[in-house]
Every structure is written in C-alpha cells, then in structure tokens.
Image (cartoon, rainbow, N blue to C red; front, side, top):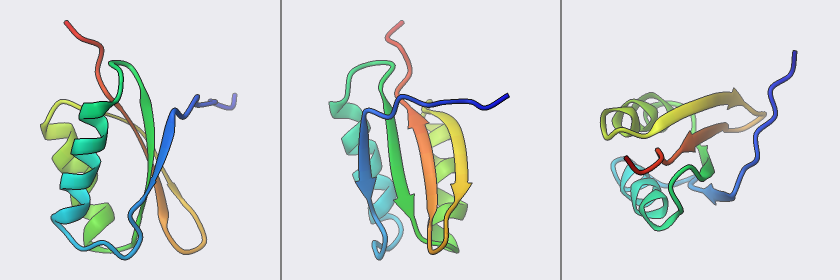
Length: 82
C-alpha cells in the first residue's frame, strides 16, 4: 500500500544552518491552515537529525522523512485546532 500526501507547500532549506532551519519551518507552519501539510527540504547531518524532533516537541505531526539524492524531504503537518 502506498501512502499519498497532499502537500500544501514546499520549503527549500538546503544550505540553511541550525537552528535557523527549524525557526523558518515553524514560522511557515504557523502561517498555514490547521491540518495543512508542508514539505521541507533539509540537508543531511544536523538539520535532518534536529528539525523533526524539535517540531514534534512543539506539537507538529511528522508524517514522513524521505531520503532523496542530495537531501531529505520532511513532511510535517500543522495539527488541527482543538
């Protein structure tokens, strides 16, 4: 079974150092509608190791982390308003 994702927007943060990539991702998610899905392109190493965990601690939902040729595609969802 293949999971499909309806990505609302893509944020290319390749070449962006930590913690700036986390801050930019969080700011982008805060401007998106509740339930919206964002795909974030992150470099290997510290960015992909730190950003998903930091977002999860903030309450965002990590849907998928997919390795690509030169980067990782992180799919993160803004939670529905409660």
